[in-house]
Length: 96
Image (spheres, one colour):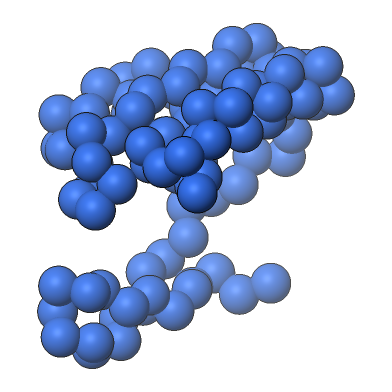
């Protein structure tokens, strides 16, 4: 698996940039996982289901779900920094 993923920044006029993937933990047992809700329809339902599976199947200690203000805007630095202080693993999630 490559350690880079192609990323198109919609604010940069379509130029392709490479972002380096964060290191992946060997397992999720005992970890605090953060899920970022993008505010689209059913995202909350999907994330609650994912949280249940993470706890039941993978031994996640705690799941923290935070919600962006608007689906069309990036999460605020404040929200991302708050999550970064609380979680060991994070995923942005979509509904809709």
